[in-house]
Image (cartoon, rainbow, N blue to C red; front, side, top):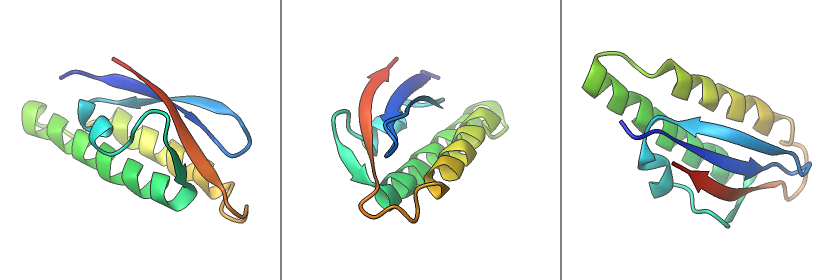
Length: 95
């Protein structure tokens, strides 16, 4: 399965490298686009869940690394829930 990394900029300007075991992440996030925090969280949840399921279909088990990445995104996003206008920018994708 082609895995990839994607780099995001959080509202505090911190840049984080994220992981997806599938290129499906590119169907849900676009490089150079800034998403409202809740939209980014939901798009990430959908894409990483699909990616983890694709691993299950191919190898017989969910991708724990994708689910771990989703948990880290959820944890980071929670830090900015009270920040008005919080958004996340997709900086780039790396295959």
